[in-house]
Every structure is written in structure tokens, then in C-alpha cells.
Amino acid sequence: MPILSSRLPRYTGPHGVGAIDLEADCDGRVIGDVKLKGTDVPALKVDTVFFTLYYPASPESRKTIKPHLWVPRPISLTAAGYARFAHITNYLVDQIFTFFLWLLAGSIEIPAYVDVPVLASHENVAVRTSTGGSEATLVDTVDKFPVVVFSHGMAGMRTSYSQWCGELASRGFVVAAIEHRDGSGPGSMIRYSNGTERVLLHMNDNDLESDPPLTSDALKYQQLSLREAEMEETVRILSLLSSSADHGLSLHLSNPLHEGQALPSFEGRLDLTRTVIAGHSYGATGAMNALKDSPTPPFAGGIALDPGKGSGPLNTKIDVPLLVINSGSWTKNQRDFYGKPHFQAVKDIAQGVLDRGKAAWFLTLSGTAHPSCTDAPLIHRTILKLATGTTLNERVALKQYVDASVAFLQFVGDGVRRGVLKEEVNNPNGPLGKDRGEKDGKEVVPYEMWEGWQVHVAPP
Image 1: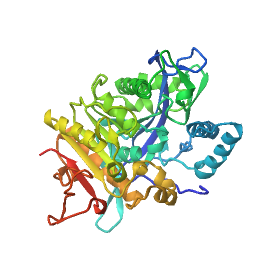
Image 2: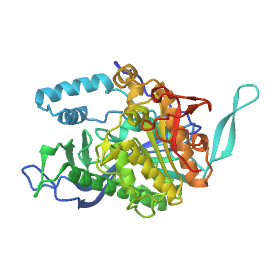
Image 3: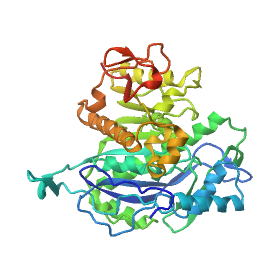
Image 4: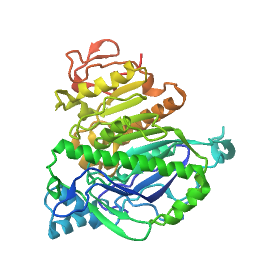
């Protein structure tokens, strides 16, 4: 039982949720010329790709393997990374960070069933009867599941968005949540198929060197390039997984995390033609960049949650459907972004997608803050509420994020607008315009009092 935190809630969709941690060797390509300070060791190298695969499973799946922990082990590695992120690392500080991280979140479990078989194309599910009970009924599910590749934000990990990822899986999507090794996270253990390991901690600018020295934007560009390479490798692994059970078995046997006995059941089950790239903050910037140079097959769409304000320029060359969701605080708190307000820069990108004949939405969910799409507000509700000033209940907020994301993913498949995606533009200028918009078609609402969804850009 968590001591100073709350358990993560069960997923609410009609399907059970399975999870597999999978790490696979890559080609070892080096990104850029930046090196670890005082060494000849490349700082940005794609030795392996590591992701958690969330997927629909039978609702009757049972726990036979211990659930994944929200804070990966060893806790000391993650804690040391956060200490480096805070620029106060030393042995004593690292020990203090480890203790408090264990106290605050060390026992939190992700509520997915580890390594259970993927949902079969025909499943017995519990259907409510007229008397209020339930009975098992054989129903068709789907032969192939649409795919989402997810990129975490700065200081985040693959586990930081387990609720968003798992909720999508419970609704029929397969989500690969990548653990990026670009030095932006707290820390990660790189494990090779030959049994060797290497520790990677958060990298600050003063941990790196290059000749000539890199500007901050140039370094972020190289880090984002590594993230794109990891996205490509993830798609490659998923393609292998879906192509044959033999590949699934091989990935299982070579997985240094000793998970994946269910991987052969993914043969022919992934619809890679409907792969959508998604991300939050720094990860949203990376996701948008990946839409410029997509892997093969190309991404069919993109979801950007709070696109980064400090992670370099945003890609404007997007020619696939795009959903951008800002939290209320991300829209409200504006800053200059390469010569224009960040809100205007994002709006121009979404409008550009529309102008090129593709569907695009730019939305803001009022009452939320930057962490609202992560697991953190569910685990430490009071702390996050006081720190961020949110007014929308954290579970309600997450459900809104999930519902809008699912509506977009369904749109990518069938072109039908659902939920909030059916709404017309109701607040085109957000915090920038003099007219804040109307409520109930009558009164002008001060921006600070806006409730619910603000729609800034939408198809006509």
C-alpha cells in the first residue's frame, strides 16, 4: 500500500490491458558529434530501443506476474537522475532523493497485466442483462489494432503516462511508450541482449562537449534527432512483431528484461497503416518533428499534448491529420516563441495543416495544467493541485484527454468526427484576442473564467 500517495486507478475501457517491457538491440548509430565531457564516448547513440507495449487483452486476464512498478528499479538510478536535473548531485543528496522517491512513489504499481496474450479476434465478454446482472457473450473484436507510438516529456519516463496509454489500450489500441535515451529523462538502464548493462543518467549541458561548442538549440536538435531514430526503431520492431510469430519469439528470447512470451500472439494483429505518433511537451515537439521525416510506413497522424516552449522550433511541414491539445495553463501563460506568441505559432501550424487539405484541431482543456495528462496528479492529487492551481478534477481531466485522443484515432481510421472533434471553433484567439468568445451564444466570457473545451482551430 503506498504510504504518501494514491494507487493508480484501474483502466475503464471494455478490454483488459496487457503490458510488456521490451528492449531490443539496434544498429548503434551515432547522432551528431556531441560527446560525454572528458571522453571520446558519443553522448547520443542508439544502442537499443526500449518501450512498454500496452495492448488490449481479455477482460478475464489474471495477474500471474507481478505488475510493473511506476518508478523503475533501481530507484537509486532514477533518484540520482533527478538530483542531476536539479543541479545538486552528490552522494548524500542522491541518497536523500532515493529515500524520498521511495517514500512518495516507490510502491506504486501500474494496473496492467504483465505479459498476458493479446485480445483474440473473438472473445467472451461480460454483457449487462435487463435484470442488472451480466452474462458471458461471444463477440467479435478486431483482427488488427491501430498503433500509437508515444514520446515522453522532459524529465519524464516511459511510465509517466501509464494511465493515458493504458486507457487507450483498454479501448482497442496498441501503444508503445518509449523510454528515450537522449539524456532528457532522469535515468535509464540500457540492457543489451548479451547480458551487459550500461547506466545512463540525465545529461545537463555541462556534462557534454563538442567542437565547436553547441548552442542550446543545436543540442536539442540532436537530442530530438535521437528521439526520432528511436521512434523509427520502435516502428521497425512493431513491424517485425506483426509480421510473424517467429519474430515475436525471437524478440522474447533476446529481451534482456525476460518478458514477452505473449509476443508471438501479435502476428498479424497490428494495423501499422494507422500508426499515429504522439507525445507530451518535449515529446510533442519530437512527435511533430517526426511527421516531417516519417519512417516507412509513414505515420498516419499526430497527437501533440502541450507542444514544447523550450525545446526548439516546431515543425511546420505537417501533411497528415493533427490533434493539438493544450492544458489551460499552457495556453494561458504565453511567452515569445521565435518572434511570436507560442499560442499563435501552434495555431498557425494547425491552420497550415487545414490549408493543405488535411484535418487539424487545436484545443485547450480549461482548468488543467501541464502535468494533467500524466499520472502525477492521480498519485499526488493535493500536492499537484496546490502546485499547479488546477480547477478540473484530475480523473475528469484525464478522461477528457483520453476521449479526445480516441476520437482522433478513430477519425484517422474512418474519417468520422466524434465527441469534441465535432465542435466548431468557439475561441479562435485564446488568450491573445480582445473578444474571448461566447458562452451559450450570448455573453462574452473573460478568458480566466472559461470552462470546458476551447476550440481554436477545427475543420469547417
